[in-house]
Length: 362
Image 1 (cartoon, helix red, strand yellow):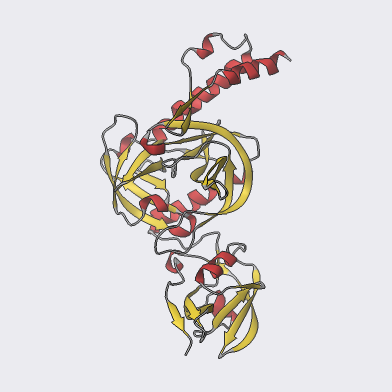
Image 2 (tube, rainbow, N blue to C red):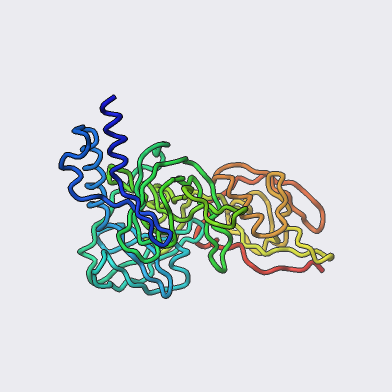
């Protein structure tokens, strides 16, 4: 009983500071000197928080991309930093600050993979002072684990919020990136830690000090047209490391966890001026569509029983599947419907967009 009381007493020792909509966790200096009702459990948890935060801050940086400000996580000792693609946008050069009051460091773009909303930039001079993070196995993340969201919300460098892992394995629509299909986070880690503008690209960290994900967005309440409190999502660490390594090594992604028909297409518009499918403009030789017998000029009208009237609908349907799965594709060939079973391939950087044009049926 005394241990539980000690933990509740300790929980009250955390100071929630409200400032322009941001809730941060402030560690009160001296709390470990004996103000936990004398319980070792409270002292241990307090020290755990302080130790984790102290180690985390040097590994999470502030990134300025033109007029946008966000966060990034130091990936390795060569100066590579992983962040969100929606923060990078179309920019090629950036300013990075490792802590409050530090001098800005120049960085440049290494690569972007918009489907997973991930990007890698690299710092030149000063990279030796950066401290890489340690990554957790996000497949082992469990509900109830305490997490800390570290980043620069609204430009407030070195801010920390706390919460728990609320759920795992979520698939959520990600931020919109101009000129690209809608992004989606697969196997997202849901957290109650506050995720505010500017937290994007930062770290969602376990008390072990390992990063379990990169905070990317918070849920939106459509009824109130406001962000939903306590519902945020992070790109899982396993996805981050897999994609980042490919971008660093080759500047592109050839192996993702996303399914693809391995085609390039454009929205097909029928004689009534309504979109009714995706016209196959070209296909990857030996790719999923080609192996199944789908040909250029075919119109993909549905996938797994779900209509695909345009490119966005096709992309949305594919999110539910993984590479290697078999799926029934409804195809119009010369106006005649047919069904073709396709073994799905893997989305790569070369297929970053199926296309954005519309083709009218004549």
